[in-house]
Amino acid sequence: MLEGTAAHLWMCWRAFYLLAAGVALACEARLPCPPSCRCNAAVLEVNCSGGQLTSVPNGVPQDAKLVNLTHNTIKTLVNHQFYNLSQLFHLDLSDNLLAFIEVEAFLGLRSLLTLRLARNQLKILSVGVFAGLKDLRLLDISSNKILVLLDFTFKDLASLELFTADDNDFVFISRQAFAGLTGLKRLALDVQNLTAVPTDALAELSVLRSLHLHQLGLTTLPDYSFHHLDLLKELVISRFPQMESLSGNSLFGLNLTSLTITHSNLSAVPYTPLRPLVYLVYLDLSFNPISYIQGSLLGDLLRLQEFHLVGGSLLRIESAAFKGLVHLKVLNVSRNLLTTLEEGSVQSVDVLEVLGLDGNPLACDCRLLWLVRRRPYVDFYGCPPTCSTSVQLQGWNFLDFAADDLSNLLTCRRPRVLNRKPEDVRADQGHTVVFDCSAEGDPQPSVSWLNPQLRHISPVGRIRALTNGSLEVRYAQPLDSGTYICVASNAAGNDSLPVSLHIRALPSKTHFQTWLVSPSAPPGGSGNHNLPFDLKTLLIAATIGFFSFFSSVSLCFILMFFWSKGKGQIKHTATIAYVPRSAVSNSNTGATSFKETGRFTMKLI
Image (cartoon, rainbow, N blue to C red; front, side, top):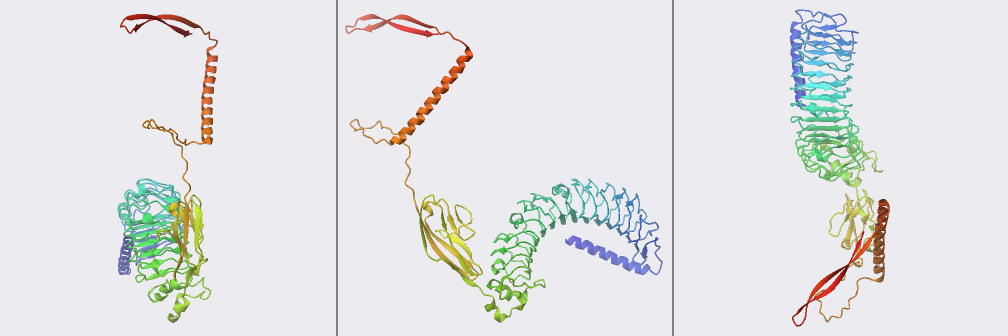
């Protein structure tokens, strides 16, 4: 952004120099002028705008510094079209019917600084079209119908600093399309028909400071989309209507000072991608359906000075939302759905200089008392906030309040928990218990719950605080027993109500055990042990065992049946044989005798 401003100032100084030189020469010669054009000898300008020209006119003076050919019907630029205009600084061909530019059409314009080709009918730029433009600083090809950017299309534009290519029909950007743009500092690119961020092509732009991307149809900005752009300071992402989130590392490697993400579909502030941007000074998330700014999640943006979220869906800015942002000077949350902005949301209210809060349905009560007292020191962009929801103060703006009446007009009523009858609930283990808690006050108090350890109960988990203010304990366990506290809070104070919960444990369940007799039991023991199984258990076990055995036997018979059918008829033969054997025995007298024995052997064939 700073480099772009410097370039514009440089061109302004050069134009001023030309003007001074032209005035000095005005009396010496009169600038010759082509038909249908108007010439100014003082600044060496040839103005042919709106001259109904169908081609570049002949007779343009060779010493011309500015040539304006806008609002004509020129369709083609031929080779060496401006070859004799070596001293030309600025050429504007916007708002024509240009459909084709021949290669080397601008050859010879070696002093050209700015070239504007916006709002024409160009569909392609051939490689070599910009040959010879070694000093070109600004190129504008926006609002054409260009489909592709080919490799090395801009390789001759080493001095180019500002390049605008918005509102085109790009379907493809080659990886080396920007090769040669070694001095480019600012790029504006329309990527409506692309399916991804052209990360590889952007990697060629090593000194890029400012990048504007418009109309990309992504639902999520991918990781490492810009990780080669080490010197990038300003990133503008606009009109990404489908983009709902940013991946955690989508901004990895950037050292931005300015980030704008507008007219997209973000439903939450992208806290994780923002965390590494410790040098960020300006952040704009306007025109996104963001509902909440959570507390204590932006503290890493230590240098942030401006935060903008205009035209969103903000319902609430939580306490400590801007905690740690000690340099925050500008906060603009106009045209949202906020009913208040509490003092605790801002880290240092004394630093705040500009606040946009108009267009919100504000309830003027004690929560805004701090802001009314600081109205002499805060700029409201010329639109002071207006009370909308308070009947007594409806239509009043912050400048209408008298200092003496503030304590009587901007009031709050302390909350009170309704139905204060103490609850003592007893339930069996495994049941679900719900405690109701409601409160009244002005403004409407928020209801939270504390567990027996006095810790806040979250909206998720087995024990959770519901959005209607109730407490739900699911599948209650004995360890959940204790005293829970309902706390109702608003800006005027708080009120509480304790409730007790007692969970009865279920009887211990009977487990199957194996009955074993210890081998070390004394032999004289009675052996009368109670079996751990009752009759019903034994019947069930026997039935299961019988069916398992019966199923196994049946399966074996079925398999044998089919096997035998496959083998055909089989003859079975049985042979029984008697085999005699001798045995040796010892008598008491020490003599040895032999005894005849026998054995039957049967073979089944």
